[in-house]
Length: 172
Ligand SMILES: [Zn+2]
Image 1 (cartoon, rainbow, N blue to C red):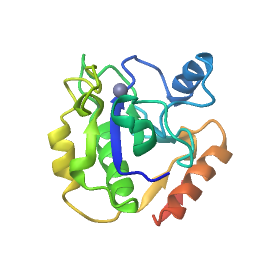
Image 2: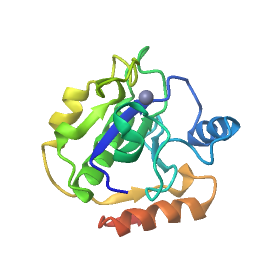
Image 3: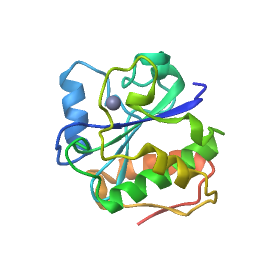
């Protein structure tokens, strides 16, 4: 895939965790969760479908093939993200933007994609603020919490993927 954008979503529902989001998407007959990453409320970043596959999150603008799909759990039209969740989002976006040389201007909320008729990712997710944070550069050490995954294998998969992208990654 040739990723030129990152598209930010909220799930629009109050799932308890990424596993529930995945189960819902599988129930729709999809082969995996539609997003490449899901950010849980407490800030755990959970790997979704592999970045080698197009997403299933944004038909507008052909973004399923051009844009990495990142979703925050929650209905951010009704309430803001928790600060840990927002911080994890910014850190994830910063890493992806740097790995794929995606400029902050190409990091868009779903509703900012021309042709998308949606409120997603909700009025309480300020994409201008997100882009502002991305303009502050710098690499970070990634910490992948095994406790955030049902299986250690999935934590290791995410860590391996992040390492392949050039991030220093530590499993805790
Ligand atoms: Zn969306």
